[in-house]
Amino acid sequence: MQLIDIGVNLTNSSFHDQQAAVFERAMTAGVAQLVLTGTSLEVSQDALALCLQLDESGQRLFSTAGVHPHDASSWDSTSARELRDLLAQPRVRAVGECGLDFNRDFSPRPQQEKALEAQLALAVELRLPVFLHERDASERLLAILKDFRDHLPGAVVHCFTGERDALFAYLDLDLHIGITGWICDERRGTHLHPLVGNIPVGRLMLESDAPYLLPRSLRPKPKNGRNEPAYLPQVLREVALHRGESTEYTAAHTSACARAFFELPEVS
Image 1 (cartoon, rainbow, N blue to C red):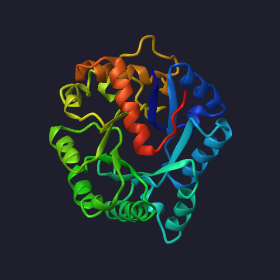
Image 2: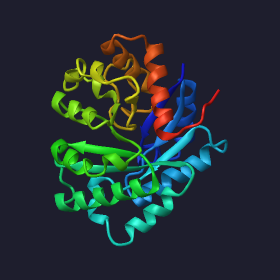
Image 3: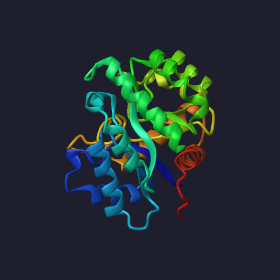
Image 4: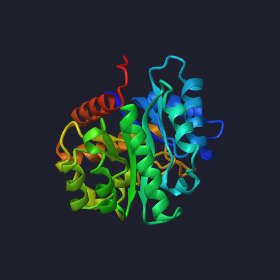
């Protein structure tokens, strides 16, 4: 049984000097491939460097490259050119993390929308899928995406935590959905339990979003409180339970979906 983790923030400072060990633990836990998340031009470059450093085979570590809405204020006339160069690298498989965050508003909303539209245009031009962030902004995100969707090869709403209406609107737009350890949180994630069964096979993927969102159902919990890709089987179990599927079947179809979406190679 193999899993693919489509969202790992391995560049995060909490993993400093431990990335190789985290990668090895993921492999031991059956997480066969990881997609490292780029959230700024600098972080995207660092994520690509980790792929090349830790996985000389070119089979197991891949990355995204983009500018997160929190960092949208940094988007300027040179950003598209720098991002284009990153997206030309073979290990970079998607544009993002990009999107809208109207919860924290770390960047002004008009600037978030400008950066998102520019990155969607790049994805259309380069024929790459998009790794999307959305928080409290589903209606606006959908409105922007509709102008690009017919020309995008694919788009995944990463770390979906929304409600039924948002989920069905995303599915109606033929988007993919990423589910994290949020579904394991008895305080705020139980609304996802009846929703995950509505995500069609071929549109659902799993992610840790490590080092964030440590599954609260994990036992024993790590003393450092940090999430890792090695804990993705916990998310798998919760998703399979609420879809009424075996863990083997959920692992197989979510991994097949991720492999097709990011055009990842088969690994033995």
